[in-house]
Amino acid sequence: MTVGEIYEILDDLSPFELQEKWDNSGLLLGDELQRVERVVLSVDIDGRMVQEADEGTLFILHHPLIFSGMNRLLWSEYPANILREMVKKGHALIAMHTNFDKTHLNRYVFEKVLGFEGGCCEEFVCRAEGEWRSDELLEDIKRKLGLERLRVVGEKRDIRSVAMTTGSGASLLDEIDADLFLTGDIKFHDAMKAHSIGLMMADIGHFESERHFADVLGESLKNLPIPVIIAQSINPFTYI
Image (tube, rainbow, N blue to C red; front, side, top):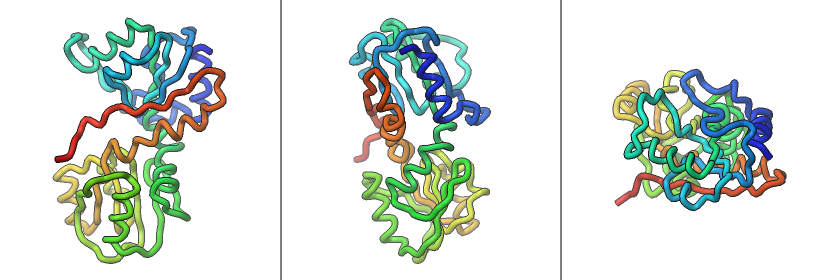
């Protein structure tokens, strides 16, 4: 298969035109006519993955390795150090970021991983109503996401509505109509704002909430006539 053929399949599955204006999803490295021997799916990419991958590999990542404008390529700096090795080995790279959040990932994590039923998903925000004890609900979320701890803003005993955005969604605070908002990368001033308006928040981690990307996309690509490998990049954080 060629990079272009796989790109068309991905575009039909989750149109790249749905990405946010600030995003950089799409073909970021390689050529549409380039032959592909295998596909590797992952949230991110690191040096180990590049070293272990055979030549002619197409990486399909959730996070764009080239995100904002690059005004220099220094091999000692990230992401140039990764790109240099990928070019040497003839790798290609496609990113599926905010478009895939909207069409697949948020709903999958909300419904299949966390088990919320009867909800709805609009753009980046999934929402469900029910009746939960906050302490029991948060413990269940920790277990299902494999989190050692949860940073929580606010305190409510009873929860009747839950909203969620995978990755970093605190910028959506003004759009949240729920008792509890689940997202990652909650900053101090976002927490202060949530506290002031009575919104309970729980930081479910950026990596932890998005690491199912490869599994979700892999299910849709399992019939490709070339191997599709589900990989997992490192989580740069450790907890002590």
